[in-house]
Image (cartoon, rainbow, N blue to C red; front, side, top):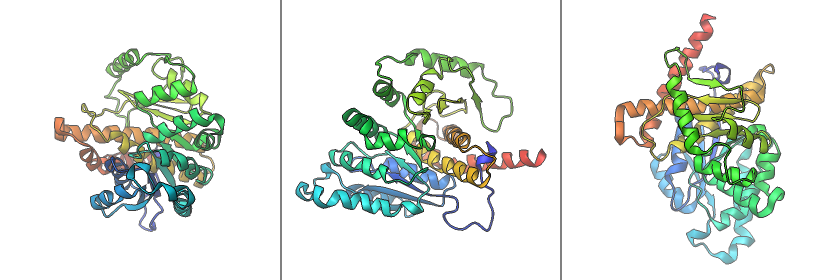
Length: 361
């Protein structure tokens, strides 16, 4: 795990630890992209950009001066003039975001994006123009647009072709249980999971009960070698159907798989599942998978595909650990900003322990 973490040196320049992007934020949802972007900064990234609709931009700018906010997305439900949209706005939206891409290391697409007719018209083109081998995370409404466009266009879907058919090893889906079922129904062509959620949740609870939390690991995760294990089976099948894309299936235990390897993140988490935890996770995935990719490029002996799945595991463990610390302090009043408060502490603890472990070897 320590191989994904860069050395923190005093000669670093701005953006060396990541200049990252969130595509999300609309009239109804301005908090989600903010949580995702702020988590990236607290997790170690140097810069975070949010590309959102006009009516989300002012609230997001007022939350924090640290996040660079671009009101480039155009949405039908914000009552812009429809007659000029197709002539000018679509091209303008795509071009403005494309102009920033050379300076960006990863894209998290979906937090607070909303489900809008106009966005559905051009989101595929934005994703299609993202440079090759770029880290792309689809979360929340990003997953919804993937499914909707695939149902409409099939294999000709721009989102599907870019995220699934090309460079899938650099791309990550972060579904919750409901989103996972939608993905399963669309891409496995079945209404029924191999393992029903109720049964799977009970198996997870039993696994946690039997896990030894006193084994002094820096982060609690395990590799599962048996793909028939009912806790990981469905996630492995879905990842394989989607060209071995990386999946973080969120739940009592997070399942992380690319269809070739499978892991359970058993890090203790909060007893309260407040809104925004998924946004925090998606932001951290954007950071640590970007770092993993950079480290693999610097050190040719490291396998890039394996490094990216380690980035997913680290993100999951850190989100859960920060949630646990925050819950210990705030208990039932826990909200997402309380979790973000502990990201830096959890990262520093883990980083220092890995450095100490390295020195002792």
